[in-house]
Structures are given as C-alpha cells and as structure tokens.
Image 1 (tube, helix red, strand yellow):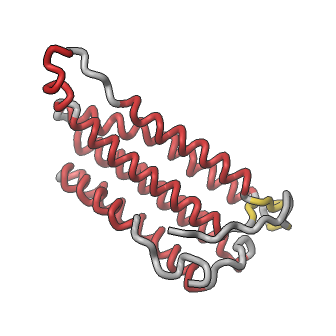
Image 2 (tube, one colour):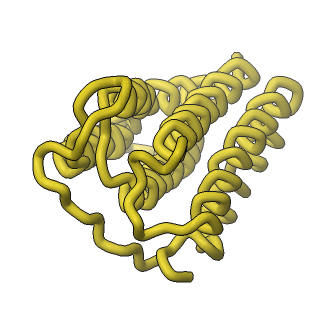
Image 3 (cartoon, one colour):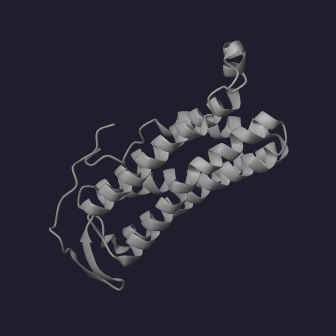
Amino acid sequence: MTEPARESNGSEGGATSFGTTRDTARLTVFSDGVIAIAITLLVLEIPPPHDTRRLWHELANLWPSYMAYILTFMLIGQVWVNHHVMFDHIRSADRMVLFLNTLLLMDVAFLPFAASVLAEAFRDGQGERAAVILHGASFCLLAVLFTLIWRYACRNRRLLAPTIGPAGVKAISRRFQLAVVWLAAGAALGAALPLLGMGVIAAFIAYYWLPVSGEVANE
C-alpha cells in the first residue's frame, strides 16, 4: 500500500479550541517508538523450555504462546499501518489529538500483557473466556480511539491535509467503525466459545491488510 507523503506546515500549524496546532512529525515518531517496543516485547512472553531432554515435546506444548504471539504481532502491525494511514492525512494536531493519541499508545503498551494472559489461559486450560475477552476488548478500545481521533480531525476538515477527499474520509471512517464492531463481536463470541472468538479476530487480520478504495489520495 503506497500512501502520500504528509505535508509539513512547520512547527506551528494554527489554532483550534484546544490550543495551538502542531505538525504531526514528532507525534508519529514517538508513536512509532512505542509501537515498536510493544511489538518487540511480545517475544519475551514466550518462555523457553526448561526440560531440554524432551525439547521438541516442550516446544510443541508452547503452542498457546505462539498463537498469542502471532495474533497480537499481526494486530499491532495493523495498528502501525493504520496509524500511518491516518496521520498521512492529518496535517496538524492540537491538544485533543495529542491526548487521544496518548490514550491509544497507553493501550498499545498494554497489549503484551493481554497476549501473555491469553497464552497462559490456554496453556493452563482455565480462564480462556476471560482471556479472549481481555485480548479482544484491548484491540476494540484501540479501534474506538482510532475512530475518535479521525472523527475529531475530520470535523470541518480543520486538521486534515488537502491530500484526501470526501471519498477517502468516508472510506477510512467506515474501516475504523467496522473494526469496532468486528473486534467487539470477536470478544463477545469468545465469552461463549473462546476458539471461535479467536477465529473471528484472526479473520479480521486477513481482511484489514486489504487496501480500501478511496483512502489513498487522488484514488
């Protein structure tokens, strides 16, 4: 997916009711750092086998950790991609955008813990329903925060760059709103059938790597 370069307006970009607006370069760099740390920490949640006499058997028994790692890694990867797609079209950020983005990053930093809980529950065979709800709800909250940031930035187009038209705004809005419903459904189904809930969330990954018509400038 090729996205347009973001326009730079310098260090100050104007003002809104939430104070002076600023170029989003530092915001995206900081966000990239938090996302990179969170996605790297996931592998530390996979405990190495202690009984090396039956190494293949012990490695196979770690399948819940591999499942949680792959699922969460791919979901955080989508968070990173969608964050860039969104801020390719947001030219400046005021204090409200900074605040909402901080909440989003706080949730991202929580995800390695949610993945660890998910793996531990499936390893022990207890608490799978609660673990799937926690994991799915963590990503559902991210989708809500993406929606809030985007809707706020799109209000009267005061924070948007001219690189995106009405069709693109609607396409991205629909994608974020669908994410809320999809992930909430996965978490809800996981409360009854944990593996089904995980399957719904995994299907979300496959869908969300597909490009959406209208989200790229001049499309």
